[in-house]
Image (cartoon, rainbow, N blue to C red; front, side, top):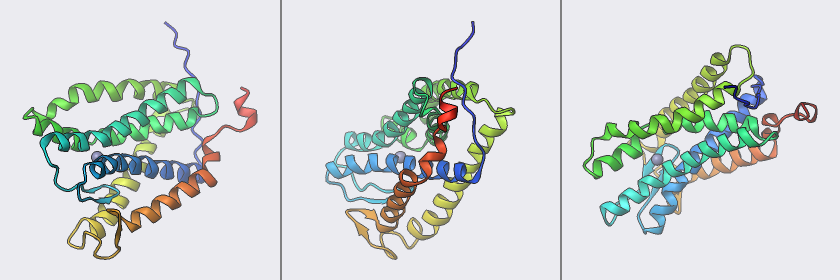
Length: 227
Ligand SMILES: [Zn+2]
């Protein structure tokens, strides 16, 4: 059987890297915003940061579960949106590949879903029974479509890059030091509607930079699009 997958070249340069990191930040923000919207709808007291924050006290375990589901639901949607763009859009296929890898990377963190399983009194590790196939299938398709020579290096670099950027810089250093540690809950910067102002500012900046400037580095040039 011969698979007819699109061919995507990962254009390694500084502008591309910045575009990927911005997209990653936006994707992670949308995940948290998913939790936020639902918790807010239930009238919970929220404190939101990039890596989670505090969704307050739910009125019932069911509310808790719905708030927890909302984040992964956003990220799974981004993953499959990425797969769709990769397979069906010449113009957005590179964005598709990046979304597949970056959302998959985020989904791999077990926190939300493991929590849901604990509330349901199920073994939390059972999440991997469905998580792994749900992530692996788009991953394999995205991996096979990469046209670069040593594609494992490109994929590895994407993971390391986003892991260092998000996991270390954003979560450990920025969130960990200033917003989730002893100084949390708006001690330094106030919250607006339960979202820390630093997140709002960073998020608006990221959106403006991404859609204003950097998205072009994830789109094919006109010449390339005709190939
Ligand atoms: Zn979450």
